[in-house]
Image 1 (cartoon, rainbow, N blue to C red):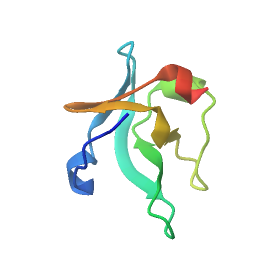
Image 2 (cartoon, rainbow, N blue to C red; image 1 turned 45 degrees about the vertical axis):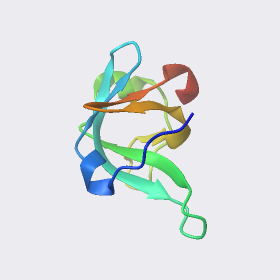
Image 3 (cartoon, rainbow, N blue to C red; image 1 turned 180 degrees about the vertical axis):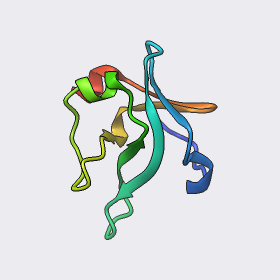
Length: 86
């Protein structure tokens, strides 16, 4: 799967939803590997109770992290595959 490159600032603040339409929160930041530039996670802000129930990895600041490889599409929303979150 190829996701078109978009400037970091264009993705911040977008809503994150599952492909089934369940809202998870909005994008606060994106983490990446500094040596390789590989994108690792989406950091959520305003996480929904549904996102909290998914038992996802959390940052040191207790923010929910969505694995970058779970992203299916980026448009008006960032769509993730719920199966890839488990």
